[in-house]
Structure formats: structure tokens, C-alpha cells
Length: 333
Image (cartoon, rainbow, N blue to C red; front, side, top):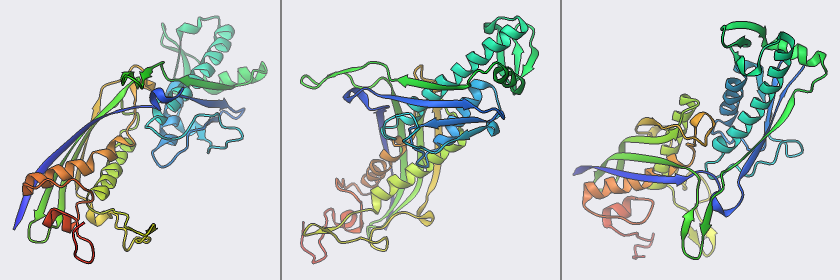
């Protein structure tokens, strides 16, 4: 007998380290003599798409093509200290640092061009690899020609950008205050089918809606949702560390099961954009929030299907079928 159920989980999560410490990030953006642009930041690319996002932010600020920009791997001897790549903080802090550095470079180039062509700096617009006079919408000079002017004057086009999170406070004793300066919100809905004869769960569909502020790169963002949903699915119905006498028993992936593409259900990502005043171009974050909701949504869906609430993960065959965990010897835990 198979029964179907629908479950939902919602969350709001603070971006950044919060009130536990001063939170800041730095970045270097440098224009080389050949016109290429280098970006260096202390936040590590772990597959979340920082290289792409930081490159897009710099390109947007300077009005150039992203193919002009090279993102440098983290080198602790030269990369600005930016803290750890944790707490869903990389885009909002590192992105702002990159944006601030690129803006300084733009201001430097704007002063050079304004002096050369007797125009006001606030009347210059950087776009499409050129610099335009706003009120006339007329091209004044190309970006490469502006770089050449700076080189002729011996001006060093490398700047350090810094971004510090807004001040917040938290009183641990009374449990009150403002622990984070902004939050991301999410909701995931799981649709499952449960075989009540065996306890087998099949996740049929996951719908994941996340407020990200603004999606700088929608394709990368959806990739984060797909990956986070699958990781949450693994936590929900498969992954469990088995220990005995202080030792991990399932040390290989033939025993510690993780979801593969064969286990992937239909995933429907929903991007909710509500630009945040603190984020670069309104962006916030989308890393960890996608992971956190899958397991509770699936657990709620199983409860809806079976009428039985299970409060221990993963939702394996024994827990679903019998409502409690069994040891391999058959005794109750």
C-alpha cells in the first residue's frame, strides 16, 4: 500500500557572522597595462560560484565585458583577509568589497578622462567598454584608451576595497538585540510516496522558493538550489554515521549512502527577488539556506502520508515502518 503526502518547511537565516564578531571582507581589483583586470579576495571558491559572481560585479561596476576579468585563486600571502567562507556571507560581504574596489578604479579613471576632455566626472557613464558623456549620450573615449591615459600619467590602477557589515548588537544575558543586519527567507515543499509495507520513501518532487535579494547570476543560483535540495534529501532519508565504541563503522560510500542522480526527484526552483539595501546590487545569499529545508520538508510529508511523526533522521526503512530505530541485533534503542 502506497500513500502520498506533502510537507513544507520554512526558514529565515541571518547573513554574515552576526553579532559574535566584527564581520568584514576585502578585495583587490587591479587593471593591468594590457587592459585585463585582476580580482583577488580572501573568500574561497568552494563551488558556490564566487568567481562568476565577483567577476560579474566588477564588470558591471566598470562597464566592461566579463572576458576582460581574471579571478585569482586565494593566496593568503597576497589576498586580503576576508574571514572564512561560511555563514552565507560571501556574496554580500565579498561582493560589496569587490564592488567598492571597482568603484574606486572607476572614479580614478573618471578624473583622468574628465581632466583630458574638460567634462565633469559626475557626467560620465561607463558602459559597453566605453565611457560616455551622460547628458549627450555621446562616446568620449574607449575603456582601453582611458587605461592608456592613466599609464601615460604613471597612475597605478590597483585598489583595495573593504566592506564592513553594519553595526549590530546582541545581549546574551537577556537574549535580546539585533543579531544580524539582514536575513534570507526560504520555503521548500516536498511531495513523497511512502510504501507502508516496506517503509521505502520516494521523493517525487521538491519545490524550493528562496528570497535571495537579487539574483546576480540566475543560472548559478538555480544550481545552488538543485545542489542544496539534493544534499538536504540525503540528510533526510539516507545519510547516517554509524558508530560503535568510538569508531565510525560505515567508512565507505557503499555503506554511507548519499543521493545520486538516480535519486534526484523533480526539482522546481523559485527565485524570489526583493533587493536588499545592504547587498551588492541588492543581492544577499543562497548557499546554506537551500540545504536546511529539505529534510524537515520530507519529514513533514512522510508524517502527512503515514500519520506518524518521526523525530530522528534519516528517515530509514526501520524508522518509517516501525516508528523507532532498530539495532542490527533486533533490539530496540
